[in-house]
Every structure is written in structure tokens, then in C-alpha cells.
Image 1 (cartoon, rainbow, N blue to C red):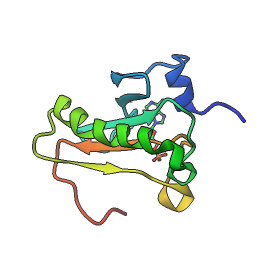
Image 2: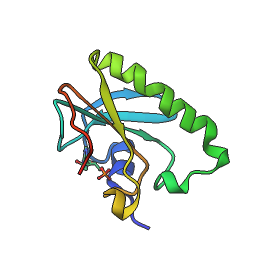
Image 3: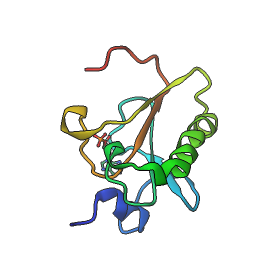
Amino acid sequence: MSKTIFARIIDREIPANIVYEDDLCLAFHDVNPQAPTHVLLIPKSPISSLDETANDDAALLAHLLLMIPRLATQLKLADGYRVVVNCGPDGGQTVDHLHFHILGGRPLTWPPG
Ligand code: AMP
């Protein structure tokens, strides 16, 4: 299976505007932002989607979720933000590497399209 674009970002084969990194995860600005702030948080391990997570991933998933408010603080999203995980074709997932969209910087409408 060929490497996803996010795996290539993790391996520094293509550039990204990285805002946070640790042993388990990486966060970087989305190349096609849908809000004034649009950051993607990804695990470094190659989990293809939320559907492909297992009990063994519990600690990693907790780490990712706990990182989100910390990143929101770092990104100065004091007025709020939205977290989106697109899953599968109907969910609009286009990159087969689990990622959390963190969107903010303007009021976001509901429901999504
Ligand atoms: P999704 O549609 O939920 O799979 O989200 C994939 C996201 O990755 C989209 O919002 C894209 O704009 C974003 N994206 C694709 N390629 C890159 C890249 N090279 N750097 C940053 N973001 C990217």
C-alpha cells in the first residue's frame, strides 16, 4: 500500500506548517483551511480511520483527545472551536490516516453539509 500524504509529512518527505509534535502525534495547519484556524492532529502510527481503531489504541486516542484543548489554547481559540473526524466515503474522509480537524477563529454554522 502506498504511503499517505500524512505519513509523508510525518517522515518529513513533504513540508507542513507544524504547530506541535511529540512521540505519538503531530499537528499542522491544513493546506486548504475551512476556517481562519484549521489544524489537523494526527497520530504518528498509521491508523487509517476511526473505524480501524481497537482497544489497544485507547491510550493513544486519549492522548490525542487530551491534546485538542491544549492545542486550542496554543492556537488562541478562546471563543471556541469545532473538532471533526471524517470517517469513510460518506463521512467525507479523503486521506486514509486518522486525523482530527480543529477549526476555529469564526462562528461555525450547524448542521454541516
Ligand atoms: P479529510 O477530508 O477529513 O480526509 O481531510 C483531509 C484534509 O487534509 C483536508 O482538509 C485537506 O485540505 C488536508 N490536506 C491534504 N493534503 C495536505 C497537506 N499536504 N498538508 C496539509 N493538509 C493537507
